Image (cartoon, rainbow, N blue to C red; front, side, top):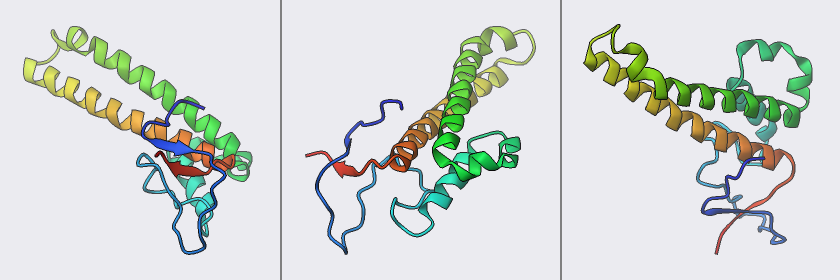
Length: 141
């Protein structure tokens, strides 16, 4: 998947103790329970479906195979990132003759805000995908 290791680590032979909570990277989506906890995959599927167009909920295959769903979600969000980057790049020129300058600047601010959000979602999808494939996260030393 994409590079989202940052300050967090993945894959280790170290086993955690029975009472030790699993380590989660700081970018782990808040809506997704930690891997191994009850209903964690269900929460992962719900998060991934929320990243996709509503019509994707109608495909049973995507609900039954979270790793497939993660790939769909990654593609959708990647396209949204690209579209938002393009929208930001064009906003000032395409809107300057249509609306007042403060409105243009607010539109630019919204594009930037949306890009930050989408990039965080993209990282979260990658982490969830890794966990669905069995990756264990460990803090970097």
